[in-house]
Structure formats: structure tokens, C-alpha cells
Length: 222
Image (cartoon, rainbow, N blue to C red):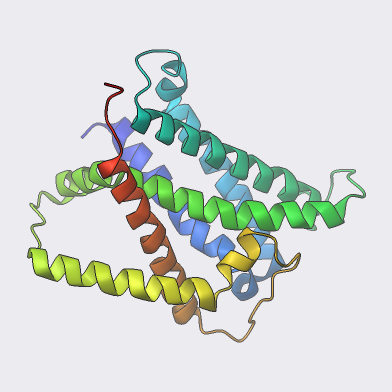
């Protein structure tokens, strides 16, 4: 595995870790949240520089249904990340506080909330649709075949999906995704392990949906 691929893996892993840190705002506080957001911004730029070939190839080749789905998802994720970054800069009280930005904080908070939760779900979908590539990379790094007994794998998937559905309700994800509330109700006393377990299950649930959508979506226009 070459250095560029290793760097891509490190950047993507860093973004995934920071995603959980950023969603745990009630457990980190303003200062850490903003610096984590700034780090995500830098990794986001690095990710697109390292994957610039994808942008260069947008106008090339045939667009099959699965490629259209993946491309639409990538653009939606890009929109969510840009919404996060712009709103984060405007709302900043620490990292970007030196910028002369005033007003519009009501709308900006709503944009930040929507971008956060949609960004989390879209990134999870993105992960699921590229799961085979992720596992292929893991196998190369670990030099392992990673064979798992099929019934055990299916049992784990059922448990993860079941708990993921519970976690979606427990963490009120749909409330924030569809703007049924303009404010996030944080549980400042929540145990960090429970929070991480919930959001890991939610990511797994959405990633599973992305994986099976990619697996069963038509690969050709014929």
C-alpha cells in the first residue's frame, strides 16, 4: 500500500472520529467543539485534494443508476459539510471570533443543526456504500482474511439494526432531521459510553442501508 493510500485512510479515519466528537457537543463544550470543527474543516479539504481525481472524472464515463445514486449522495454530503462549516464560522465564539460577523444567528443555528444531523447520516450512508472498499483496505492493512461465520454475522447485523432503531428514537434523530424542533435538547448528564454506543449503532444502521442500496441498485442502464 502506497503512502497516498495510507494518507487517505488516516484522513478518513480522522474525519470519522471527529464526527463523533462533534456530535457529542454536550459532552465536550464550546471550546473543544469549535477546535474539533476547525480540524474537520482541514481534513475535509485534505480529503478532497487527495480525491481530486473523482472531481476530474465527473464528466467522464457512463452514468449508471448506482453511479447516479453515489454522485447525488456525494453532492448532498458536500452541501451538508459546507453548511456546517459556514454556520460554524458564523456561530464561533473562540476559533473564528476575530471575524467581524454579526447578525443572522437564529437562522444560522438552524442551519448548523440540520447540517450536523444530515451530515452524520449522509456520511454514514457514504460509508455503507463504500463498505466493500473499506473492508478490502482493512484486510490489506491487517493481512487477514476476516472470515466471519455467516449466521454470526447475520445475528450481529440484526442486533445492530434493532438497537440502531432504538437509538434513533432515544437520541431524537428524526426530530432534528426534519426540523420538528429548532433546538437540540442536550442531555448533559448522559454517560459518554452510552452516547458513543448509541451513535455507533445509528451509524451502523444507516451504513447498512447504504450497503444494501449499493448492493442491489442496478449496475447498468440496460
